[in-house]
Image 1 (cartoon, helix red, strand yellow):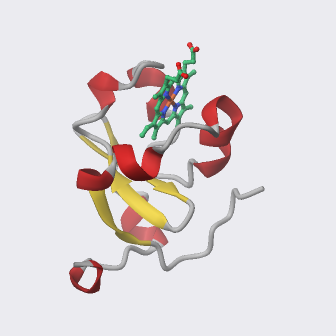
Image 2 (image 1 turned 180 degrees about the vertical axis):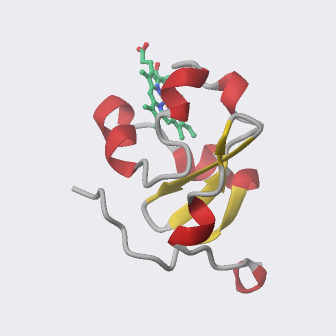
Length: 88
Ligand code: HEM
């Protein structure tokens, strides 16, 4: 299935920074978390801090133990091809 996923570059990622259209980059993958927003235990505003960006560092600051990989399986857009700028 992964062979059919579209690659996402930085230019595309930054376009999705709204509560109605929210993508975030976590490590090598971009997720569309729009439908997850209202279920985020930390609240919409917290998750929106990462909207349209590389949210890996923020994510790790709060809960590096959370298994986003498994939780966001159905929200996966595709692998990121741009330069990851905010990584530890
Ligand atoms: C909880 C921030 C992304 C899953 C929280 C809390 C904050 C936070 C502040 C509340 C902690 C507390 O009150 O105890 C953020 C930020 C994110 C982000 C800034 C990115 C910009 C995500 C993502 C997921 C996620 C992508 C899952 C796919 C969770 C879960 C909790 C939580 C499961 C509850 C953790 C627990 O109680 O152990 N988050 N979050 N978060 N977040 Fe996030």
